Image (cartoon, rainbow, N blue to C red; front, side):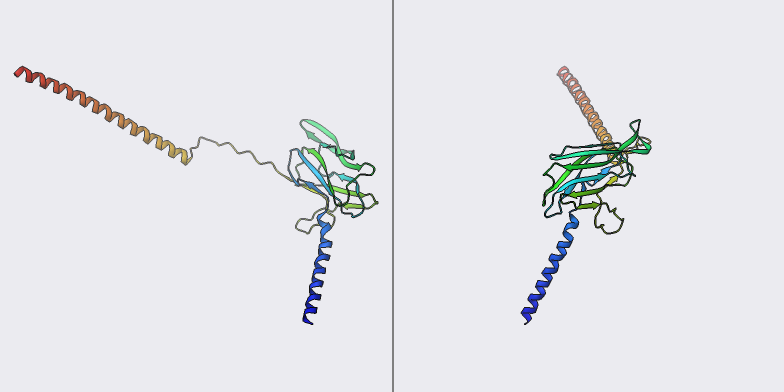
Length: 242
C-alpha cells in the first residue's frame, strides 16, 4: 500500500516537472539581439537571433522596428541566403549631427522576407546581421519585432522591460549602451613615484660608491709610486755610502 502511494506521488511529481518545463521552455526562445551590449557613440555589428517556436510552421518574415527615441544615422544589413530585406525610412523632427553633417532621415524599419518555400524551419534558428552607428547617448535601444509564421501566426516581441521586474511574456530585444571610458587626465606637474624615487636614490648611492672606489684606487696608486721613488732613493744612498 505504501509502495503504491509512493509510486503515485513520484509520478505526479514527475508530471508536474514536465508541465513546468513545458510552460517555461518557450520563454527562453524569444527573439534577441547579439551581442546585447555596445558603446555609445560607436558603431556596432549586431545580429537579431530568431528561433522557431512552432512545431509545424516555418518563420517566413521578420519585422524589426528601430526605436523612435534613439535614431541612428547609419544602418546597413548583411545579405542572408534565401532572404530579402526591405528598408523603410522616416523623417526626423530634429536632425542628427554626424561628422559635421545634418541627417534628417533615418531607417525606421527593416523587413526580412524568406523566399518561397524557405524560412526558418521548426527546431532551427536564423541570425540577421545589422551594422549601425553612431549609437545614441542612451542607456538602451529597444527593438520591437514581429515574427510571422507560414501558417499566418504572428509572435509579437514588443513588451518593454521593467526595471527591477520580471521578464515580460513577449520581451522585445534590448541593446544595452554604455559610455566610453574616459581618457586619463594629464598630470598638472612633474611627479615622481616612490619606486622611481627609490631607483634614483639607488643610482645616487651607486654613483657615490663608485666615486669612492675610484678615489681609493688613485690614492693607492700614488702611494705605490711614492714608495717606489723613496725605495729607489734609499737604494742610491746605500750604494754611495758603500
